[in-house]
Length: 283
Image (cartoon, rainbow, N blue to C red; front, side, top):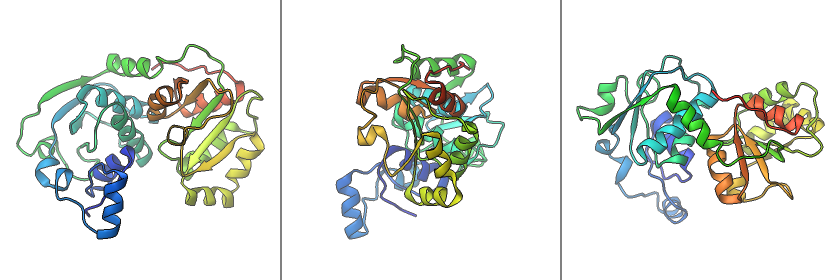
């Protein structure tokens, strides 16, 4: 289907994972499309513009959500504006991993479409992803590149004490909310810290019915919907240091809100909220 979507992590997800077609639209053009049911037939609506431009050869395991975030962040920085074709993925990612990967690549670069042969919607092989064209560049990704992405995402933080732990960018699924509840395991959020989990309104209602929202409240955490600190530009009063499992938020919050940002796993984030200190382990 041809769509008119805005917001970078949504655009790259619909193009790559779902296989529909949209450019990164703005408020005016999406508003016009809503009224007219029309959008200009240009850019990623056209077959010839959906062909891969850069080959990324992965030579290290990419398995966890953090792994996928780091890979996306590295690729976005490496190619800036292009369509990466990722080769060498051995473990099949779920939708959460693909969501975090695309959001990271769209944050550090201007990636609106990517191909993971046999995984994403439009390419069964590397050759099919390039449609007979030659890659502009071949980019290696190994342990050194992964560590480089990790160090850059954590380059703004100097203090270990954490005022806010933010989870859910892109918005958390019900499974991710359940994971946070299990990681809390009856523990309480530190008196001088905050734990905010963001999810769509519909999933928030499911979390309420399932009891997960109450578990979060009992722990001193908050379940919020339909926004995030970077977009809404709001954090707890006096907040200076934030930790997150989102490469996108680790990229934007220091720039937009002038905060120190730590990036790590979901478990590291929940532990930071409970202990009041971030103790991340580099890959």
